[in-house]
Length: 453
Image 1 (cartoon, rainbow, N blue to C red):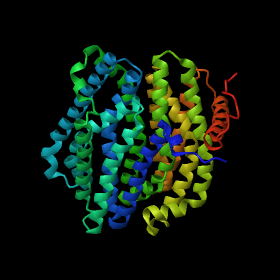
Image 2: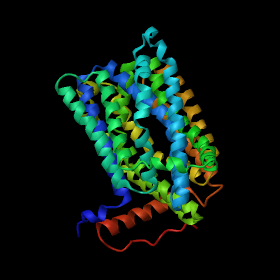
Image 3: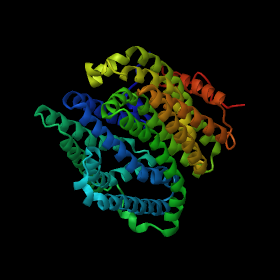
Image 4: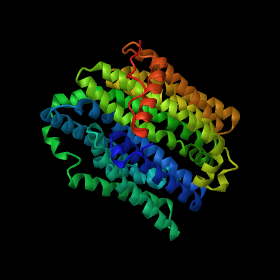
């Protein structure tokens, strides 16, 4: 058998995977360090800040990420400049509004005793602003399939972060405030590089048009609502946990789910490359290829996640020990990881259902799907946590929400595409065999391209 050469791996899928591996690797390393040098209470506050920051960032990302890819990918030079200029205009507007809200509550910080709220007021607006150029650059590069540059920028951002945190930990200075400062400064550094090297395409701001801006906004408002509602799933879980069970319980839940990055890495990578491919196909009226991508990627990922879930079942204790230390082995964290990995087998089809609905210009349906998931999640979480008095209640809520979202998305997508669960799995099997033969064994495809009857 001929071994694959490195040059064979230089494609958008591999580069996207490597980029997400960089993020996951830094995240794991950072958590492993912080879990050993910080108290559970302070670590819970840090996780809480990241959760709220992620929600604030989802406002900007929800409005513009999918819209940028959908309207920019595969377009001509003039249209591309109009779209990117309008993206910058809207991104600046959203960031400015978030900053105004932050400044409005700043005068009250002296009368607030809650540490979580004080940290949010001090750092949220600054952190959102610091990541703006990097975020816009990321959207553009995803649409352009420039995953090599994305990988490089992520290495700068995340590599600087973990290196600085390790130095702080060595000198016993890994405090909550220092952590927040390092996070801000690494964002500033990466955004500065994006601006100076021209990756952010900021000059297109002057090419924007009112009609294109409104076109992006009218589409993005639905994906914004979907993205915010989707993020509220995770945010609600964190808020319910910290409210009913306390910050230490949130730390346990976060440690238990952090290794889910093993699923999120390929999922984010394939969603990014798949979204760009589907947008280009849709903009060129190639619905056959769009349908093919919408079935191929989730089919392959679903099959790949099954052995991953089985391996995790037996290796969960080892993973939690490496990530959080022996102190978390006696908590619910290992079992949370085991259960969540089996739930994750459903993620690829559910995630691609939502992305495909957006691409075929059905963002309103995707919004209904996400709202359904959020409603089911919140109700199930409150009931389950109240009854069980344990973070296992959150896991039950995640399962219920996933089933609800999968059902709604699949039902509506079948109205617009030649699409079935059987077709997804069969195409996934065919493409996995073809990938193994072409890339590993260097043989012709074992099966011809699959066409669903």
